Amino acid sequence: MRVLQRRLADFAAARRWQPYHTPKNLVAALSVEASELVEIFQWLTPEESARVMDRPGTAEKVEDEVADVLSYLLQFCEVLGIDAAAALAAKIERNEKRFPVPDPVPDGDTPDSPDRHSPE
Amino acid sequence: MRVLQRRLADFAAARRWQPYHTPKNLVAALSVEASELVEIFQWLTPEESARVMDRPGTAEKVEDEVADVLSYLLQFCEVLGIDAAAALAAKIERNEKRFPVPDPVPDGDTPDSPDRHSPE
Amino acid sequence: MRVLQRRLADFAAARRWQPYHTPKNLVAALSVEASELVEIFQWLTPEESARVMDRPGTAEKVEDEVADVLSYLLQFCEVLGIDAAAALAAKIERNEKRFPVPDPVPDGDTPDSPDRHSPE
Amino acid sequence: MRVLQRRLADFAAARRWQPYHTPKNLVAALSVEASELVEIFQWLTPEESARVMDRPGTAEKVEDEVADVLSYLLQFCEVLGIDAAAALAAKIERNEKRFPVPDPVPDGDTPDSPDRHSPE
Image (tube, rainbow over all chains, first blue to last red; front, side, top):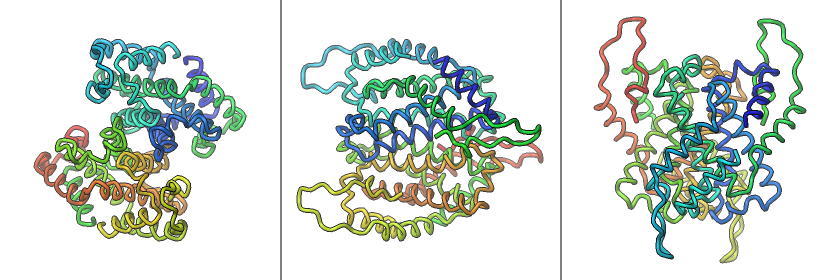
């Protein structure tokens, strides 16, 4: 991840895009790319959404948008000096304490949704 | 990144959240987290946005939202079998061909914005 | 709608918020509010999503977010001099020509999704 | 606004799109359209963002996206039986109480940002 972040920084520097790469602009671009990913799924049923990678054209588009989201996330982290992997590792540790593993539920019962013990 | 992706998958499995983790739902959650990052910056000037990490409370919040975005991106990739790092590496290579490094611009000239040779 | 737009403009002017209300900031705020609406639905099944107004607390929250989205949309239109209703009326007319009403489909057949003749 | 909402409902019904128009899908589409509006502004300075309507091609695009946002907002309200204008009027009234008009600030002073007494 750090190697990719460096390559992205060099890429932007060589094209002199840094003046455009304020944290505010990069985070807007990140949210735009996340929405382009949403767009692929917006009319699909949950079941269809699980099969998107079976359609070659769509699979490629999904991977492309994943790359865009990760790209802007890393560029954002680069300009602000954030270590995204460390931030996530710290968050997982906090969440492991906040959301203890529940007791087994009897078969057929529905477990709580992530909403009810929402990780955020 | 792969280690984090695995820990997130185990975390969700232990809490039986997989039924909620359709690609469609995860991508919605990803875009919601990206917007929570935008929210921090929405009324800031470009200059203020560059200094967000100087305010301890805000810095922590930014890192927290970065962790959330990366978390949902990796969980999305997990359920669809996507290698996010490989997707990004492939994209950088394509972009290096599509957007050749420009000739030096005279001092004081404004380089083209990323819009004009938009990487996407 | 015009009356509401005027009230919002007066509201912001009285609080001297205009310096913050650049089109760029307002559109970011609009997308943040739209995402807060998405957040309510992110873990729901399609069926559950159709019943959100049955839960009093959620119903109120949904209406509140709808107000926020409309509020920022109208404030955005105000600062740029856009007539949102006229823009939508013009778009509906264009779409009526672009997407002719299809022939009746036999019972049980699935009609095309909006994706295939996407209105945008 | 009610007339437009009706025309949109008839438009979707004639094309048999209702099965796709769950509240969850419509709110995803709404957020995607809001992001397409953000995309137009993402690399602009605040000053450039105030002048977007001077460029004919961009002006048209902005109006088009405004129409799309309003279209999905009204379609969402239609399927859930929400009166968007009434929701906004009620919110403005609540906000007028919550955020009293401040005393005049001496010339040159910066008023508080909407963040500090955020309307939401």
